[in-house]
Amino acid sequence: MKSIKVVLANGELVEASPTQRPELFFGCIGGYGGLGVLVEATLDLADNVKIEQIVERMPVTAYKGYFAGKIQSSKTAIFHNADLYPPDYDRLAAITWVTTEKPVTITDRLMPIRNHKWLNQLGYYWLTEVPFGRQLREHVADPIRLHGDVVVWRNFEASRE
Image (cartoon, rainbow, N blue to C red):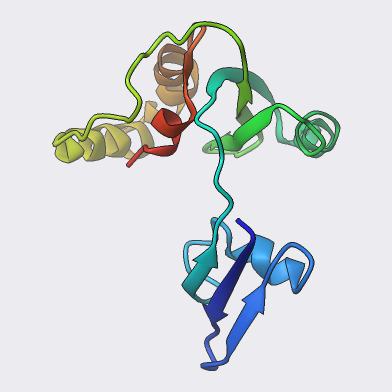
């Protein structure tokens, strides 16, 4: 993304980019509207390259150094997130999608539209609210979900609901 225009809580319309108001720009990206309402965005276009999923588990205390050393300056990292594990939130799974030349393991260009939202909601409820559900997520569900050599097209991963 090159730049955004945001309406702040006081009604002011401001422009932000990585060089102009960078704290607002980066805070709004993925900020779920908490800092303001995005009303315009100027986007960069990217090639639909093959990307490979890399998963690393670690204590939360190791994440800052991991991110600074391996992700922030990476020339191959395309997407990255860290999933925290309750109830103590002291462990996480760092999930990074990096460019690769390996053959794709899922040939679809976009993620299929699914009408199973109720099933996903039930699964998330079970993994977060049922006793021992939190531990099952970390030790059973995520190892199944995040296993193997997964190589997809960039647009496939970006098209998640």
